[in-house]
Image 1: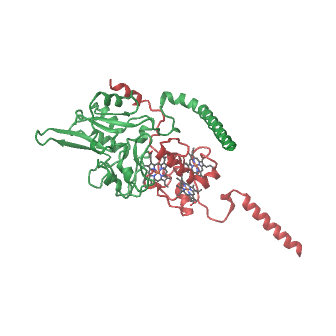
Image 2 (image 1 turned 60 degrees about the vertical axis):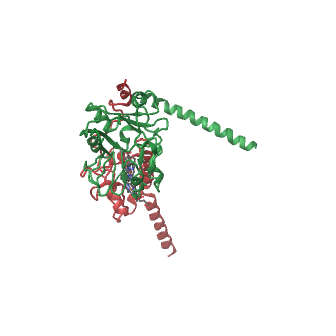
Image 3 (image 1 turned 90 degrees about the horizontal axis):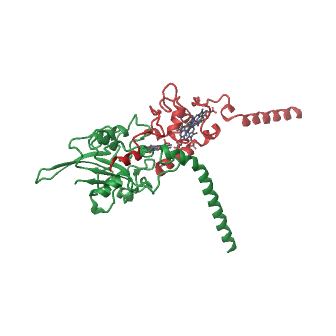
Length: 144
Length: 246
């Protein structure tokens, strides 16, 4: 008798251990999970797991860096997220409910105001960092 | 006492080490950007510069709208001029009523050193960047429009309606105040503001943009060579935009 109970307990423990050990999104089979399109390229700008939890912090930090200090690094730029994560179908990250940012946010009941202003589609032509002309130092020459 | 000296010296060591690391990592960057780019992306705006502009009204054509059109295209403005439409730059005609002499000039945010819009902003959204560009941080703007009332140049607009299809580089949206940014997204990659580029491409050459603090810049040289004025100089705002010929 006692042994059956012990076995059941052990089984429960083992089950729990399996659930906690498995990657978060595969853990709860049977629960409806958001279908998230995979981004372009090999991997995200940080560890996938870290991004799931912390992307909003990265974005808010980078927003202030760019807006207030004029720092123009691209790693945590919202424009870059959109470039990699825009859907193949809609070309956007938030146009349809299945698009990357929208799918997960809908699932988690998160509503963003970012798209009131920020484009959800990538730039048509990507900006080059080094523009040949017209440049400031050329402008220096123009008045003499 | 001895403890404080200790912390002091260790702080110095730390700073020195920091400087060294910064030197090493910046080294190649400086070299690389020296050719194509005067400022590395991670560097940020610096108070060693002050962006400014000189507008020669004698070259600015009455009826010419090229700067306005270029601004609208770059920043995704509709180009409409109703009371509720955004205008970041607009043409103003001034007429001498006795002689009938008409002058035309573009008016926009004057990027003041002492901006009244920044003074009155209750949230810190109205701001001046280290390099003198006056901006609205629209992540913090609550749309109260105090700054619009404070601006003597009527340079700011409020977005009344939802917008779509914004330029990815120029996010704009309902409920916020906005104004000329000197095309900060272009300036940060060493390009001229769209209005200046258009004015020069069409060879009117009425606008010169550059670093007021760099004596070698075209704008500083021109300011040194010609008489120029600030609009409403009486207010002591030290505007970054100056006019010549009015």
